[in-house]
Length: 203
Ligand SMILES: *[C@@H]1O[C@H](CO)[C@@H](O)[C@H](O)[C@H]1NC(C)=O
Ligand SMILES: *[C@@H]1O[C@H](CO)[C@@H](O)[C@H](O)[C@H]1NC(C)=O
Image (cartoon, rainbow, N blue to C red; front, side, top):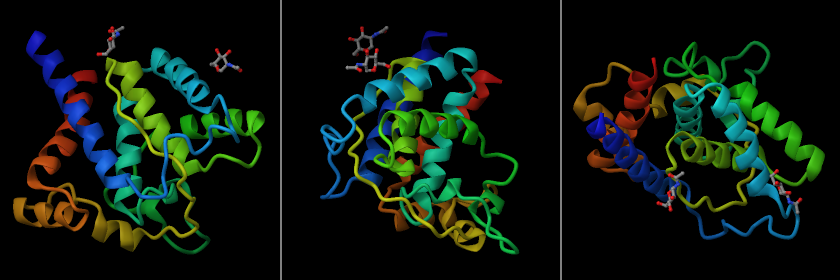
């Protein structure tokens, strides 16, 4: 049991560091909304905490939603877009269809933050904060989230199919996919393990 708890915490802590490496940008800043939406981070944390209290299985799902968003066109919330009429979007990609969940949680966060700070905070930032706060609520694991992302408007299943690690990829094809995002084999093992481990631990 102890082993289980420590492993999951270690995985998640390290996972956070990698997401940070993946998303960090010179223009992003943890204080991006400090004057335009003062109480943003406290409010998102409170909303997410409420959801995780009701359903702990949402924590790995929100983490995975953020991870899959970042792998396609960067962390721009494109994973949240519905598929365009007559076309397939990221939601229809092999690694996403019927396995991504937590969309309604992000909708809830967005609705509540819009009520507080209309038209200020991007969905991409809310997704990044929600993933972090779900881990904080789940296991008191946290990392810092630089803010200021812009939301994307393009979503494509074919792009997601080529960018996301496929469920049955070989070691070498998977390592190449992570390398393309600036991530090492160690990062890959930890990223994959964090989502899988949590799912195993929960279901
Ligand atoms: C900020 O949000 C938290 C969580 O919702 C709340 O407890 C606190 O009172 C809020 N602070 C202000 C200044 O609105
Ligand atoms: C959460 O982690 C922080 C930093 O490691 C620690 O100070 C705090 O006591 C922890 N809180 C809980 C509820 O475990």
